Amino acid sequence: AAPDSYLGNFWRARANSALDPETTLGLAKPFYEEVATLLESKNDPRYNAALVECYSYLGYYYLLAIENPALKAEAKANKETSRDYWSKILAIGGVESDLSSSFFALFLFIAIAIYNVFVNVKQSMSGAQS
Image (cartoon, rainbow, N blue to C red; front, side, top):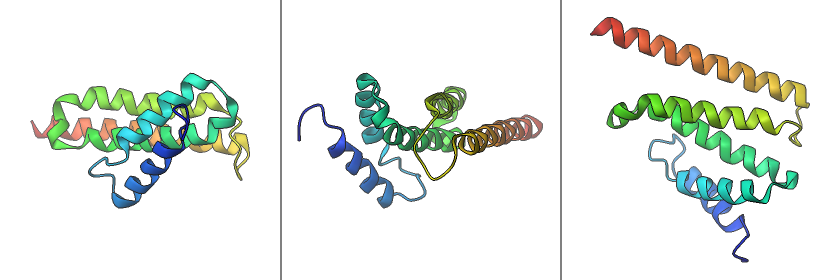
């Protein structure tokens, strides 16, 4: 594969994601990060669907990392990082998919809202337990 091809790491990410279906180990994370970095540098809309896949995985990974006791000190940063990835998906817009763009944007808006409620409830619960 060419050095500027994303496909090798993209399929490695997918394979590792399948090996870690609960995303507890984050096996696909480094590969999706590499793919996202490479595709962002290309700045070509042909790669938007692949970027959405990368951002979706990474956003979900960092959402789960908020609850990971081993990463408790990084919870606030993980919350922001997760939100950033979901926002990047919204910024892409016009993603080729079976869903219309407006439905896709609405879905992501609802997902971000649910995420914010989840984080606020967890913070409230942890504050009440202290």
